Amino acid sequence: MAAHKGRRLRKGAATTAAAALAVAALSASQAPGATSAPEPLQTSAGHSTPVPEASADGNATGNSPYYTDLPPLNSPLPSPSSTIGTPVSRGEGEAGIPATVLDAYQKAEAALRAAKPGCNLPWQLLAAIGKVESGQARGGRVSADGTTISPIIGPQLDGNGFALIKDTDHGAYDGNSSYDQAIGPMQFIPSTWAWAGRDGNGDGKADPNNVYDAALAAGHYLCRNGWDLSTERDLNRAILSYNNSTDYLNLVLSWVDYYRKGTHSVPDGSGGVPGHRSDDDLPRTSRPAGPGTATPKPTKPGKPSKPANPPKSSPSPDPTTPGSPSPEPTPPAGTPTPSDTVDHLVSPDLDGTELTATAGDAFERRIGARAVTKDGKSVAKIRVRFTISGDTDATFTGGERVATIATDAKGVALAPQLLAGEKAGTFKISSVVVGHAAKGVGYTATVTPRPADKLVRTSDTALTSAPGGEFGQVQVKATYKGAPAARVGATATLIKSAANPSANIVGPYFKDANGQPVRTLTGLTTDANGVVTLPKLYADLFSGTYLLRVTTPGGGSVTVELKVSVLASASASPSPSPSASS
Image (cartoon, rainbow, N blue to C red):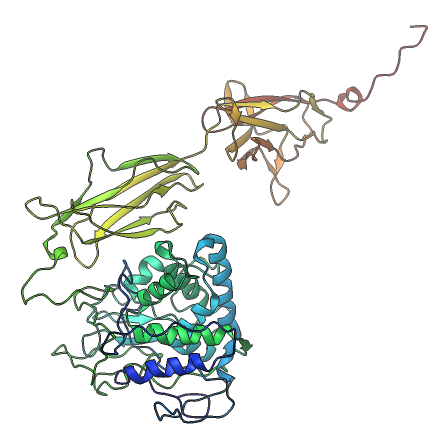
């Protein structure tokens, strides 16, 4: 299946030690001054082990299989490794990344640089994960908008050599209503995509099979928890949160280092596809053909088969918890886990579950959840996931709409501070126990518009026009408690009378985008000084005195008089000096 000639080191499930040595050899061969991958983490026995505290959210892929091909070395010709004795493919062909895929990675980096500058996400990390997870969307087989020509679907996670993750999306993403399967070029499992998915190409939907959407989602996933990926510790933790195996960590780091030395774009569909996978040693009856276009048929549930010589460095996921991190040492059979003892979640205080904040402010009250058993006892050290939903731009601190927090000794998990966005309205925050079907607690939050309690015109010049003419622009200033009210929404209406604030049907008017008369304008916003300048006003053919009223949330209001008169043009000009005989 590989597109490039020459044999490559096969780092399958049974070659953990060899792969670690190959990574070391790769780092040693790199040009002076290049950033090299960290040394593989090892135990005293020489086996790679996961870094502790890899993730609080589980992992993106459900520890699905991945491509294990190492990047080439710099030499133009293959030569045997003196340490391993296995030829390693060398050359620069792998430096080419399909153009649309490369564009998606770089756009995701730019988006994260603006949204989370402290994360320092390099696009080469997304490229490395994309290489390992799907061979850069199967060599760049994507359409112009970044959607894969056919879905990329991993093997079903049915416990036969893989984790056991029963269906969480009713087959909506992976077409499998029995078990979950990793999906798309970045291989998210459906339960993770449900909260991590992003719209990266601006088409209004988050599609795991679109490389722009998947790359942006992966970037946000790697940048959560306040991680700074310019530090080795946080970079390692972020990668391990994607797939909790140090073999995976070392492999991704080797590709990051390779791509940092220089890459170039190649036409979509012409990239190489890796030839070896981490599940190569599974029995053929248990191992699907790899990330491909068709959904593998579910196998009959039975005793899970195990890969030959399973690597000690790749911890097995919890077979009952979708997307869970590496478990603690297995307790005696029948011993319930802490999450198994949770009956439901309750609010940790008695203030109710409704919250209110003004647009742009932080909610004063921290939301949380307390995990309790049936008899009301608190449960510590279980993970609670808080999710913001609804038509809102509110987020938790750090810009995320999802946060996973472990309960403390009192069974309480407090979510990060909730920040109101600029969009007014009501939304929901739900809480669930990760990996356990306990009843959660929900919150309703309302964002009220920024207020202004006073509006005044910035000029006292009379506003007059001849029939069919134009007025000067109206400008007003908003204040709140005497201070300029910035970013306050305003509405301008040509009203019927001081006592009747409904929109008039004759008289002065604004124009819409098509040049048609409109007599009510919404969506106006004051600037940093509290000032808003209205669009140009036009007079129709009816003479008279008319009223324009501007209002804001918080009670601000000002009414402006507009006069339409055949003498308006004359009265607007300076009067001639009186003659001496007058």
